[in-house]
Image 1 (cartoon, helix red, strand yellow):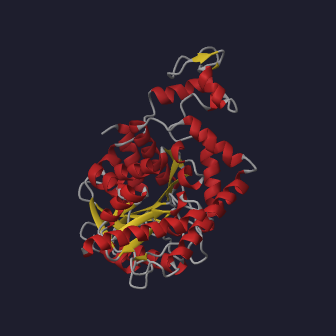
Image 2 (cartoon, rainbow, N blue to C red):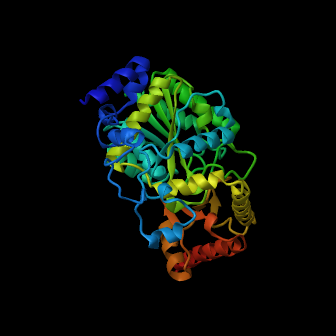
Image 3 (tube, helix red, strand yellow):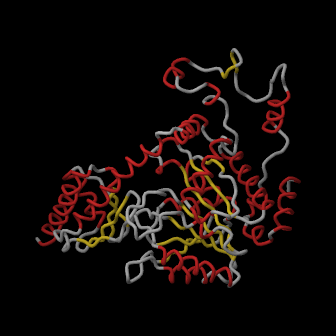
Length: 436
Protein backbone atom coordinates (compact mmCIF):
# COMPACT_ATOMS: atom_id res chain seq x y z
CA UNK A 1 0.00 0.00 0.00
CA UNK A 2 1.22 3.50 -0.81
CA UNK A 3 2.71 5.24 2.27
CA UNK A 4 0.36 8.20 1.81
CA UNK A 5 -2.67 5.91 1.87
CA UNK A 6 -1.24 4.14 4.90
CA UNK A 7 -0.75 7.47 6.68
CA UNK A 8 -4.33 8.55 5.97
CA UNK A 9 -5.64 5.19 7.16
CA UNK A 10 -3.65 5.35 10.38
CA UNK A 11 -4.97 8.86 11.05
CA UNK A 12 -8.61 7.96 10.57
CA UNK A 13 -8.22 4.65 12.41
CA UNK A 14 -6.77 6.49 15.40
CA UNK A 15 -9.41 9.23 15.41
CA UNK A 16 -12.48 7.16 14.45
CA UNK A 17 -12.20 3.39 13.93
CA UNK A 18 -15.85 3.31 12.83
CA UNK A 19 -15.20 5.48 9.80
CA UNK A 20 -12.14 3.44 8.94
CA UNK A 21 -14.27 0.27 9.06
CA UNK A 22 -16.81 1.88 6.72
CA UNK A 23 -14.22 2.37 3.98
CA UNK A 24 -14.12 -0.09 1.12
CA UNK A 25 -10.92 -1.83 0.05
CA UNK A 26 -10.51 0.84 -2.62
CA UNK A 27 -11.36 3.53 -0.08
CA UNK A 28 -8.49 2.33 2.10
CA UNK A 29 -6.08 2.17 -0.81
CA UNK A 30 -6.84 5.55 -2.38
CA UNK A 31 -4.94 8.76 -1.61
CA UNK A 32 -4.28 12.13 -3.15
CA UNK A 33 -0.66 12.32 -4.33
CA UNK A 34 1.45 14.85 -2.47
CA UNK A 35 4.30 14.49 -4.92
CA UNK A 36 3.89 14.68 -8.66
CA UNK A 37 2.50 16.99 -11.30
CA UNK A 38 -0.29 18.53 -9.23
CA UNK A 39 1.74 19.29 -6.12
CA UNK A 40 4.85 20.42 -8.01
CA UNK A 41 2.75 22.66 -10.24
CA UNK A 42 1.07 24.18 -7.20
CA UNK A 43 4.46 24.91 -5.65
CA UNK A 44 5.70 26.41 -8.92
CA UNK A 45 2.63 28.65 -9.13
CA UNK A 46 3.75 30.24 -5.87
CA UNK A 47 7.50 30.48 -6.47
CA UNK A 48 8.30 30.27 -10.21
CA UNK A 49 8.53 34.01 -10.94
CA UNK A 50 10.80 33.70 -13.97
CA UNK A 51 9.39 30.80 -15.97
CA UNK A 52 6.79 28.21 -14.95
CA UNK A 53 7.24 25.14 -17.14
CA UNK A 54 5.17 22.68 -15.10
CA UNK A 55 1.52 21.93 -15.78
CA UNK A 56 0.38 21.05 -19.28
CA UNK A 57 -1.44 24.12 -20.50
CA UNK A 58 -0.28 26.64 -23.09
CA UNK A 59 0.19 30.35 -22.44
CA UNK A 60 0.30 33.30 -24.80
CA UNK A 61 1.09 36.81 -23.64
CA UNK A 62 0.93 35.48 -20.07
CA UNK A 63 -2.68 34.38 -20.50
CA UNK A 64 -4.12 30.93 -21.21
CA UNK A 65 -3.89 30.30 -24.94
CA UNK A 66 -7.32 30.11 -26.55
CA UNK A 67 -9.19 30.32 -29.82
CA UNK A 68 -11.09 33.50 -30.55
CA UNK A 69 -13.98 31.54 -32.04
CA UNK A 70 -14.55 30.16 -28.53
CA UNK A 71 -13.62 33.23 -26.51
CA UNK A 72 -15.92 35.54 -28.44
CA UNK A 73 -18.86 33.48 -27.18
CA UNK A 74 -17.54 33.77 -23.62
CA UNK A 75 -16.29 37.32 -23.69
CA UNK A 76 -17.88 38.17 -20.34
CA UNK A 77 -15.27 35.97 -18.65
CA UNK A 78 -11.53 36.23 -18.30
CA UNK A 79 -9.54 33.43 -19.99
CA UNK A 80 -7.97 32.57 -16.62
CA UNK A 81 -11.44 31.58 -15.34
CA UNK A 82 -12.18 29.33 -18.29
CA UNK A 83 -9.25 27.55 -19.83
CA UNK A 84 -6.83 26.36 -17.14
CA UNK A 85 -7.54 23.20 -15.18
CA UNK A 86 -9.76 23.70 -12.15
CA UNK A 87 -8.28 22.43 -8.87
CA UNK A 88 -9.21 18.77 -8.23
CA UNK A 89 -11.43 19.80 -5.32
CA UNK A 90 -13.02 22.62 -7.31
CA UNK A 91 -12.67 26.40 -7.41
CA UNK A 92 -12.02 27.50 -3.79
CA UNK A 93 -14.34 30.51 -4.04
CA UNK A 94 -17.18 28.33 -5.32
CA UNK A 95 -16.67 25.75 -2.58
CA UNK A 96 -16.78 28.43 0.12
CA UNK A 97 -19.85 30.08 -1.37
CA UNK A 98 -21.67 26.76 -1.68
CA UNK A 99 -20.97 26.06 2.00
CA UNK A 100 -22.45 29.44 2.91
CA UNK A 101 -25.48 28.57 0.80
CA UNK A 102 -25.86 25.23 2.59
CA UNK A 103 -25.79 26.92 6.01
CA UNK A 104 -28.37 29.46 4.92
CA UNK A 105 -30.75 26.90 3.41
CA UNK A 106 -30.35 24.21 6.10
CA UNK A 107 -30.46 26.02 9.46
CA UNK A 108 -30.08 22.76 11.43
CA UNK A 109 -26.46 22.66 10.24
CA UNK A 110 -25.67 25.61 12.51
CA UNK A 111 -23.03 24.57 15.02
CA UNK A 112 -22.44 21.25 13.27
CA UNK A 113 -19.03 20.15 12.01
CA UNK A 114 -18.85 19.37 8.32
CA UNK A 115 -16.35 19.63 5.49
CA UNK A 116 -15.97 22.21 2.80
CA UNK A 117 -17.93 20.91 -0.22
CA UNK A 118 -15.76 19.23 -2.87
CA UNK A 119 -16.78 19.87 -6.48
CA UNK A 120 -17.93 16.87 -8.49
CA UNK A 121 -18.91 16.39 -12.11
CA UNK A 122 -22.57 16.65 -11.02
CA UNK A 123 -24.48 14.35 -8.69
CA UNK A 124 -23.94 10.98 -10.35
CA UNK A 125 -20.21 11.52 -9.98
CA UNK A 126 -20.71 12.28 -6.28
CA UNK A 127 -22.67 9.07 -5.80
CA UNK A 128 -19.98 7.19 -7.69
CA UNK A 129 -17.35 8.58 -5.31
CA UNK A 130 -19.39 7.33 -2.36
CA UNK A 131 -19.65 3.93 -4.00
CA UNK A 132 -15.90 3.75 -4.59
CA UNK A 133 -14.97 4.88 -1.09
CA UNK A 134 -17.46 2.86 0.95
CA UNK A 135 -18.94 -0.06 -1.00
CA UNK A 136 -17.35 -3.49 -1.28
CA UNK A 137 -18.74 -6.62 -2.91
CA UNK A 138 -21.81 -7.76 -0.99
CA UNK A 139 -22.27 -4.60 1.08
CA UNK A 140 -25.93 -3.61 1.50
CA UNK A 141 -27.17 -0.44 -0.17
CA UNK A 142 -30.63 0.38 1.15
CA UNK A 143 -33.02 2.35 -1.07
CA UNK A 144 -36.84 2.62 -1.36
CA UNK A 145 -38.83 0.68 -3.93
CA UNK A 146 -39.53 3.98 -5.73
CA UNK A 147 -36.05 5.00 -6.78
CA UNK A 148 -33.80 6.38 -9.49
CA UNK A 149 -32.62 3.49 -11.64
CA UNK A 150 -29.05 4.79 -11.77
CA UNK A 151 -28.53 3.64 -8.16
CA UNK A 152 -28.34 0.05 -9.38
CA UNK A 153 -25.72 0.92 -11.99
CA UNK A 154 -23.68 2.99 -9.54
CA UNK A 155 -23.72 0.70 -6.52
CA UNK A 156 -24.66 -2.77 -7.73
CA UNK A 157 -23.14 -3.08 -11.20
CA UNK A 158 -20.01 -1.00 -10.60
CA UNK A 159 -19.24 -2.05 -7.03
CA UNK A 160 -21.08 -5.35 -6.48
CA UNK A 161 -23.42 -4.10 -3.75
CA UNK A 162 -26.47 -6.02 -2.61
CA UNK A 163 -29.47 -3.74 -3.17
CA UNK A 164 -31.97 -3.88 -0.30
CA UNK A 165 -35.39 -2.36 -0.96
CA UNK A 166 -38.15 -1.16 1.34
CA UNK A 167 -41.54 0.42 0.52
CA UNK A 168 -41.36 4.21 0.25
CA UNK A 169 -44.91 4.71 1.54
CA UNK A 170 -46.76 3.11 4.43
CA UNK A 171 -50.53 2.48 4.60
CA UNK A 172 -51.08 6.10 5.66
CA UNK A 173 -49.32 7.20 2.45
CA UNK A 174 -46.45 8.67 4.45
CA UNK A 175 -42.76 7.75 4.45
CA UNK A 176 -42.35 4.18 5.70
CA UNK A 177 -39.74 4.76 8.39
CA UNK A 178 -40.50 1.44 10.08
CA UNK A 179 -39.65 -0.41 6.87
CA UNK A 180 -36.41 1.56 6.61
CA UNK A 181 -35.58 0.58 10.18
CA UNK A 182 -36.22 -3.09 9.44
CA UNK A 183 -34.03 -2.93 6.35
CA UNK A 184 -31.17 -1.41 8.35
CA UNK A 185 -31.50 -3.87 11.23
CA UNK A 186 -31.48 -6.76 8.76
CA UNK A 187 -27.81 -5.93 8.19
CA UNK A 188 -26.78 -6.53 11.80
CA UNK A 189 -24.78 -9.64 10.92
CA UNK A 190 -22.77 -7.65 8.37
CA UNK A 191 -22.39 -4.73 10.75
CA UNK A 192 -22.47 -2.23 7.90
CA UNK A 193 -25.01 -0.57 5.62
CA UNK A 194 -25.18 2.25 3.10
CA UNK A 195 -28.51 4.13 3.13
CA UNK A 196 -29.45 6.51 0.30
CA UNK A 197 -32.11 9.12 1.10
CA UNK A 198 -33.39 11.00 -1.96
CA UNK A 199 -35.67 13.96 -1.17
CA UNK A 200 -37.48 15.25 -3.16
CA UNK A 201 -37.79 11.69 -4.38
CA UNK A 202 -37.26 10.70 -7.98
CA UNK A 203 -39.66 9.41 -9.35
CA UNK A 204 -42.51 10.38 -6.98
CA UNK A 205 -41.72 13.99 -6.08
CA UNK A 206 -42.19 13.26 -2.36
CA UNK A 207 -40.44 14.91 0.59
CA UNK A 208 -41.27 13.79 4.14
CA UNK A 209 -42.60 16.11 6.79
CA UNK A 210 -41.02 16.96 10.12
CA UNK A 211 -42.48 14.01 12.03
CA UNK A 212 -41.50 11.63 9.24
CA UNK A 213 -37.97 13.05 9.25
CA UNK A 214 -37.76 12.44 13.00
CA UNK A 215 -38.88 8.86 12.39
CA UNK A 216 -36.13 8.46 9.79
CA UNK A 217 -33.59 9.69 12.34
CA UNK A 218 -34.92 7.21 14.90
CA UNK A 219 -34.63 4.38 12.36
CA UNK A 220 -31.01 5.26 11.70
CA UNK A 221 -30.28 5.60 15.40
CA UNK A 222 -31.78 2.15 16.02
CA UNK A 223 -29.33 0.70 13.52
CA UNK A 224 -26.41 2.65 14.92
CA UNK A 225 -27.19 1.61 18.49
CA UNK A 226 -27.42 -2.00 17.30
CA UNK A 227 -23.79 -1.68 16.19
CA UNK A 228 -24.41 -1.21 12.46
CA UNK A 229 -21.96 1.23 10.92
CA UNK A 230 -24.13 3.23 8.55
CA UNK A 231 -23.07 5.48 5.71
CA UNK A 232 -26.08 7.74 5.08
CA UNK A 233 -26.11 9.57 1.76
CA UNK A 234 -28.56 12.37 1.08
CA UNK A 235 -29.13 12.68 -2.65
CA UNK A 236 -30.38 16.28 -2.71
CA UNK A 237 -30.60 16.61 -6.49
CA UNK A 238 -33.94 18.47 -6.38
CA UNK A 239 -33.24 20.41 -3.21
CA UNK A 240 -35.13 23.69 -2.61
CA UNK A 241 -38.06 22.73 -4.86
CA UNK A 242 -40.45 22.29 -1.91
CA UNK A 243 -43.97 23.38 -2.83
CA UNK A 244 -46.06 22.68 0.28
CA UNK A 245 -45.73 23.61 3.93
CA UNK A 246 -46.19 20.06 5.18
CA UNK A 247 -42.74 18.91 4.03
CA UNK A 248 -39.22 19.59 5.20
CA UNK A 249 -37.82 22.72 3.60
CA UNK A 250 -34.21 21.88 4.39
CA UNK A 251 -31.91 18.94 3.75
CA UNK A 252 -32.22 16.06 6.20
CA UNK A 253 -28.40 16.13 6.12
CA UNK A 254 -28.66 18.82 8.82
CA UNK A 255 -30.34 16.36 11.18
CA UNK A 256 -27.94 13.56 10.27
CA UNK A 257 -24.73 15.55 10.77
CA UNK A 258 -22.82 14.35 13.87
CA UNK A 259 -25.80 12.16 14.83
CA UNK A 260 -23.98 9.10 16.21
CA UNK A 261 -20.46 7.59 16.07
CA UNK A 262 -21.82 4.78 13.87
CA UNK A 263 -23.43 7.18 11.38
CA UNK A 264 -21.42 8.96 8.70
CA UNK A 265 -23.56 11.54 6.89
CA UNK A 266 -22.69 12.55 3.32
CA UNK A 267 -24.50 15.19 1.27
CA UNK A 268 -24.59 14.99 -2.51
CA UNK A 269 -26.03 18.07 -4.19
CA UNK A 270 -25.32 20.52 -6.97
CA UNK A 271 -26.37 23.30 -9.26
CA UNK A 272 -27.75 20.84 -11.82
CA UNK A 273 -31.43 21.02 -10.90
CA UNK A 274 -31.34 23.66 -8.18
CA UNK A 275 -30.10 26.39 -10.52
CA UNK A 276 -31.50 24.90 -13.76
CA UNK A 277 -28.08 24.22 -15.33
CA UNK A 278 -28.36 20.52 -16.14
CA UNK A 279 -25.62 20.49 -18.78
CA UNK A 280 -23.08 22.35 -16.63
CA UNK A 281 -22.39 19.20 -14.55
CA UNK A 282 -21.47 20.99 -11.33
CA UNK A 283 -22.13 19.08 -8.12
CA UNK A 284 -20.69 18.76 -4.62
CA UNK A 285 -19.95 16.14 -1.99
CA UNK A 286 -19.85 17.15 1.68
CA UNK A 287 -19.02 15.07 4.77
CA UNK A 288 -20.21 15.61 8.33
CA UNK A 289 -17.96 14.60 11.21
CA UNK A 290 -16.97 16.15 14.53
CA UNK A 291 -13.28 15.42 14.06
CA UNK A 292 -11.34 17.70 11.66
CA UNK A 293 -8.70 15.02 11.09
CA UNK A 294 -11.34 12.59 9.86
CA UNK A 295 -12.77 15.28 7.57
CA UNK A 296 -9.27 15.91 6.20
CA UNK A 297 -8.74 12.21 5.48
CA UNK A 298 -12.10 11.92 3.73
CA UNK A 299 -11.33 15.00 1.65
CA UNK A 300 -7.93 13.64 0.63
CA UNK A 301 -9.39 10.27 -0.34
CA UNK A 302 -12.17 11.96 -2.27
CA UNK A 303 -9.64 14.07 -4.13
CA UNK A 304 -7.76 10.86 -4.86
CA UNK A 305 -10.86 9.37 -6.49
CA UNK A 306 -11.39 12.59 -8.47
CA UNK A 307 -7.77 12.58 -9.59
CA UNK A 308 -7.95 8.91 -10.60
CA UNK A 309 -11.17 9.28 -12.61
CA UNK A 310 -11.78 12.74 -14.09
CA UNK A 311 -8.64 14.54 -12.80
CA UNK A 312 -10.72 17.66 -12.12
CA UNK A 313 -14.13 19.04 -12.97
CA UNK A 314 -14.89 21.50 -15.79
CA UNK A 315 -13.57 24.97 -15.04
CA UNK A 316 -15.95 27.06 -17.21
CA UNK A 317 -19.14 25.72 -15.68
CA UNK A 318 -17.77 26.18 -12.15
CA UNK A 319 -17.00 29.78 -13.07
CA UNK A 320 -20.50 30.29 -14.49
CA UNK A 321 -22.13 28.97 -11.31
CA UNK A 322 -19.82 31.04 -9.10
CA UNK A 323 -20.60 34.25 -10.96
CA UNK A 324 -24.32 33.52 -10.82
CA UNK A 325 -24.25 32.96 -7.06
CA UNK A 326 -22.36 36.24 -6.63
CA UNK A 327 -24.80 38.23 -8.77
CA UNK A 328 -27.33 40.33 -6.80
CA UNK A 329 -30.03 39.33 -9.30
CA UNK A 330 -29.62 35.62 -8.58
CA UNK A 331 -32.13 35.20 -5.75
CA UNK A 332 -34.92 37.09 -7.53
CA UNK A 333 -34.44 35.14 -10.75
CA UNK A 334 -34.36 31.83 -8.91
CA UNK A 335 -37.56 32.78 -7.08
CA UNK A 336 -39.24 33.46 -10.43
CA UNK A 337 -38.44 29.95 -11.65
CA UNK A 338 -39.50 28.41 -8.34
CA UNK A 339 -42.87 30.16 -8.62
CA UNK A 340 -43.37 28.70 -12.10
CA UNK A 341 -42.51 25.21 -10.89
CA UNK A 342 -44.81 25.52 -7.87
CA UNK A 343 -47.70 26.61 -10.07
CA UNK A 344 -47.14 23.59 -12.32
CA UNK A 345 -47.11 21.24 -9.32
CA UNK A 346 -50.27 22.80 -7.88
CA UNK A 347 -52.03 22.68 -11.24
CA UNK A 348 -51.06 19.02 -11.63
CA UNK A 349 -52.61 18.20 -8.26
CA UNK A 350 -55.70 20.26 -9.11
CA UNK A 351 -56.21 18.34 -12.36
CA UNK A 352 -55.65 14.97 -10.71
CA UNK A 353 -58.02 15.80 -7.84
CA UNK A 354 -60.85 16.63 -10.25
CA UNK A 355 -62.23 13.09 -10.02
CA UNK A 356 -62.21 12.62 -13.80
CA UNK A 357 -59.56 9.94 -13.77
CA UNK A 358 -60.27 7.97 -10.61
CA UNK A 359 -61.24 4.84 -12.52
CA UNK A 360 -57.91 4.82 -14.35
CA UNK A 361 -55.36 5.61 -11.66
CA UNK A 362 -54.42 6.79 -8.21
CA UNK A 363 -51.40 8.98 -7.70
CA UNK A 364 -48.66 8.75 -5.12
CA UNK A 365 -48.31 11.68 -2.70
CA UNK A 366 -46.07 14.42 -4.08
CA UNK A 367 -45.16 17.87 -2.80
CA UNK A 368 -41.82 18.80 -4.36
CA UNK A 369 -39.29 18.27 -7.14
CA UNK A 370 -39.87 17.71 -10.86
CA UNK A 371 -42.05 14.60 -11.00
CA UNK A 372 -45.12 12.73 -9.87
CA UNK A 373 -46.20 9.11 -10.37
CA UNK A 374 -49.51 7.64 -11.41
CA UNK A 375 -50.46 4.20 -10.09
CA UNK A 376 -52.37 2.65 -12.97
CA UNK A 377 -55.37 0.43 -12.19
CA UNK A 378 -56.27 -1.26 -15.47
CA UNK A 379 -53.36 -1.19 -17.93
CA UNK A 380 -49.65 -1.95 -17.88
CA UNK A 381 -47.45 1.17 -17.77
CA UNK A 382 -45.12 0.07 -20.56
CA UNK A 383 -48.06 -0.69 -22.83
CA UNK A 384 -49.53 2.73 -22.05
CA UNK A 385 -46.18 4.49 -22.47
CA UNK A 386 -45.71 3.02 -25.93
CA UNK A 387 -49.29 3.74 -26.98
CA UNK A 388 -49.10 7.37 -25.82
CA UNK A 389 -45.84 7.87 -27.68
CA UNK A 390 -46.95 6.30 -30.94
CA UNK A 391 -50.56 7.51 -31.09
CA UNK A 392 -50.41 10.89 -29.36
CA UNK A 393 -46.77 11.95 -29.40
CA UNK A 394 -46.61 12.07 -25.59
CA UNK A 395 -43.56 10.87 -23.69
CA UNK A 396 -43.76 9.42 -20.19
CA UNK A 397 -41.68 6.96 -18.15
CA UNK A 398 -42.96 3.47 -17.32
CA UNK A 399 -41.77 2.04 -14.00
CA UNK A 400 -42.45 -1.49 -12.80
CA UNK A 401 -45.86 -3.11 -13.10
CA UNK A 402 -48.12 -0.19 -12.16
CA UNK A 403 -46.35 3.17 -12.22
CA UNK A 404 -46.11 5.91 -14.84
CA UNK A 405 -43.83 8.86 -14.10
CA UNK A 406 -44.87 12.28 -15.40
CA UNK A 407 -42.46 15.23 -15.31
CA UNK A 408 -44.70 18.27 -14.77
CA UNK A 409 -41.49 20.34 -14.68
CA UNK A 410 -41.27 20.42 -18.47
CA UNK A 411 -44.96 21.05 -19.24
CA UNK A 412 -46.42 24.56 -19.37
CA UNK A 413 -49.07 25.15 -16.71
CA UNK A 414 -51.82 25.72 -19.27
CA UNK A 415 -51.04 22.39 -20.99
CA UNK A 416 -51.19 20.13 -17.93
CA UNK A 417 -54.93 19.43 -18.14
CA UNK A 418 -54.59 18.39 -21.78
CA UNK A 419 -51.64 16.16 -20.90
CA UNK A 420 -53.55 14.15 -18.29
CA UNK A 421 -56.72 14.06 -20.36
CA UNK A 422 -54.70 12.54 -23.21
CA UNK A 423 -53.08 10.02 -20.88
CA UNK A 424 -56.57 9.10 -19.72
CA UNK A 425 -57.70 8.73 -23.33
CA UNK A 426 -54.76 6.39 -23.86
CA UNK A 427 -55.93 4.25 -20.96
CA UNK A 428 -59.43 4.12 -22.41
CA UNK A 429 -58.04 3.12 -25.82
CA UNK A 430 -56.20 0.17 -24.28
CA UNK A 431 -59.22 -0.86 -22.20
CA UNK A 432 -61.36 -0.95 -25.33
CA UNK A 433 -58.82 -3.12 -27.15
CA UNK A 434 -58.67 -5.49 -24.18
CA UNK A 435 -62.47 -5.72 -24.06
CA UNK A 436 -62.74 -6.94 -27.66
